[in-house]
Amino acid sequence: MSAVPKLVSTRMPEKMSTSRSELDDLLDSQFLAHVSLVVDGEPVIIPTLFARDGDRILIHGSTGSGWLRALAAGAPACVAVTEVGGIVVARSAFESSIVYRSAVLFGVFTTAEDQVPALAVLTDHVLPGRTAEVRPSTGKELAATMALQMPIDQWSLRTSDAWPDDPPEDIAGDTWAGVVRFGPPPVTIHPDPNLRPGIPVPPSVTELSTTDH
Image 1: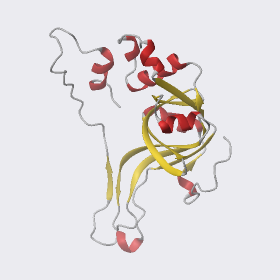
Image 2: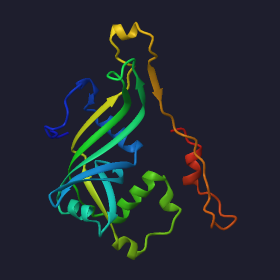
Image 3: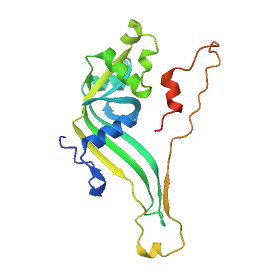
Image 4: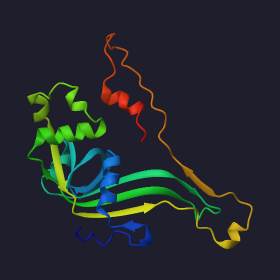
């Protein structure tokens, strides 16, 4: 891992991790990232689908997208990925916090040379096996889409999962404290009203309602 920018917070070093396997685990568990960059002198931040593919992260979008073209042209980027796992309910507002895993990655995107495989990785990251269930993308669709890649080189990872750290005088009081953990909500599957009768729900979708996350 290369050095990260000095602006990255070094407070509470006990929450920081240099484990690449922990980073990969977080990236593999999420599919929404926020990509920030400067376009025409103005800072922008864009929520977008992403996927980790080995030692690179992938994003995609329209070839007509100004922010995507700026990234492809070499604009420095910052990518943030966060998982919120619950709320640490302390005896004071000051000590209250959240359970989270958060990564910030830095680098420069380039156009992925393997456009079709890269787009398949992105699709299957959201719904594993989905590319085998749908028709291949048309030439027109591929021409309108651009996949970018950024090496996983500079990054910062922070995690927080602990009980409230209340001072003794608060612990001696009458205020409740604990941790509220978020779990996966029930998954319900609703077919398109225009779906023809007899078309089964594909495995990539039914898996969402049967897998423990």
